Image (cartoon, rainbow, N blue to C red; front, side, top):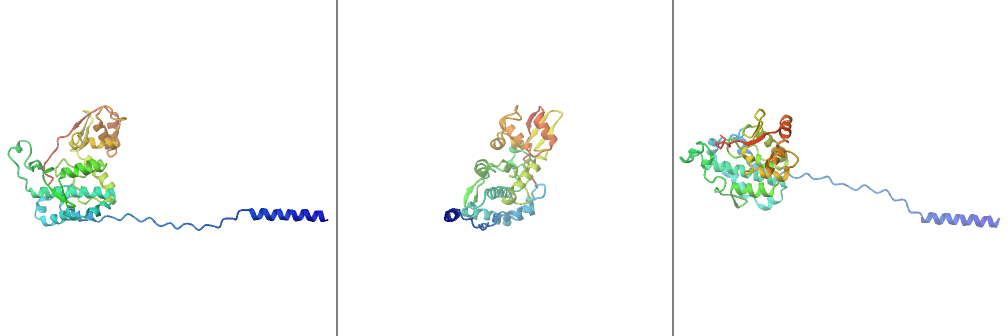
Length: 293
């Protein structure tokens, strides 16, 4: 009897020891409180251009320069906004809003240069090469007319080179810079803004490529015609870093291959099939510099 009691006592002691060594069950952890993501604030600066573009630019990108010429004070107020913007404020913006800012600055400043030279006075010598309303009669329109943005001196050519060709790897911007001319991309009658920049740029590309002055295919003669803006000497090479390819369009030069590869994202399936499978020559269209009015 004593022996059985000893065995029982020993077993109980072992069980108590094992129980004391077992890890405690973890207490149910309360779910961590997840803070809702705060939406990126919309930059309101771009709206300062809205009235000028809405009131003097139509849906086809044509500009009422005659009326705008009588509203110089209104245009100057918008230019002052670009001149006086603090760089510290600009630096806090996301990339998309910075792109939108420079597109709006470029387009508004070009409107101002045209107004300063309106109506265009054609030089007799230049009439041999350009029609009377060509903006090529405005000497140094791209690289000699200076203006201030954020209290820094710029020209249109400098904005194009410094920001659109070097800083931002976004070739669609070249379809958003209006050239105040028939063959250029149409000027939007709304400002660019970071929150809808992607859709605006895609829309600009489609609008531009829908014009026979920018892109067309002659299937009988096996020719593809492209805007002069897409020449290697103009903006063609700017497409290579993002759209360059050695898998398609192998009989074309690298810049032309990149441009064609880019275009296939925006044209019809029939045109894409032709571009990717047919044998054809690429020709660049003559640029029409007549004022877009």
